[in-house]
Image: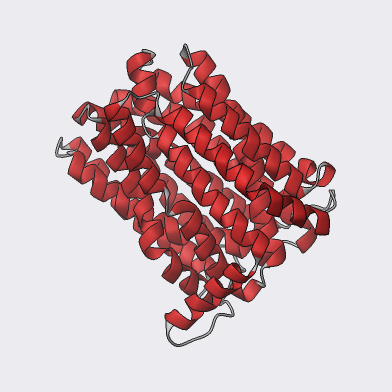
Length: 400
């Protein structure tokens, strides 16, 4: 995968802008949801349920969504998903403005937003190889990851927390506007037209993608590793808002700033990922990213103040960015285009399906032991997963 200076096509940049606008709104939303949750309850189990609800749709809908993405226009699926989410968050904004929000409402709203994110997420990763050349995939993915990081890490959280301080409904309204703008940008995008998936029942199509991934040892291993690591990520981070605003004394506005400082690492990781994959090799770079995150998560539980916490979160973000960019690129390089939506859906099911379980486990651990306890537990689990998978990853590197 050579580093190239070839310019990415104009169609790609329209896709990029649609994702970038969406990321700003999403950053505001994911900051406002836990902030609103902790004003309604101090029980970490209920706070964790709000987070878990947004990821449950990956367990329920990822596989059929992959079949839809391979059968219909991938751009059309993305646009429909944005419109659906816009309706949901606008309803949340209206309810918040009326003072009619409770924890159950937040859980339902987070779940419905998650449904839209399943379709948008699978389609957006699957459409990139239709828009850019094969040799440009790593750079295209890195640019998209940077846009997501800046929106969700730098712009969205501070703006969302600031708006939340002014009026609870405002960050939800901002996300609704961002989703509508994203859908309008996608309306003008050509490409990703009707895909090559088979007509008829979705079940055989889903099974075809499942068999392909199960039969590919490297991607199967990476999918399982992703599942363990996203479980651990959520296990530790689900009570981050309680650690920051409670034990470390960070206010609502400061919480958004904390997330923005932490996002510095994700930006650096997005900038460096493609080059690290070229210089070190994709597999060694992935192993290094996994090792760094295992150590960092143990240290996160020992953070004495918000600045140390932010620095460690930034280092974790760097490692996570390298992992995400390189694994997405590997899938796009190795999976046949006609199967990409379905294979992505199985991969994301394995990778993201454990997130709600991690959130619930983190909430229970925080309730029984303390809000810091989830981080070292997650770090140890990450280290064990890396040690178990290391021989296979090294063999894959030797064959590459």
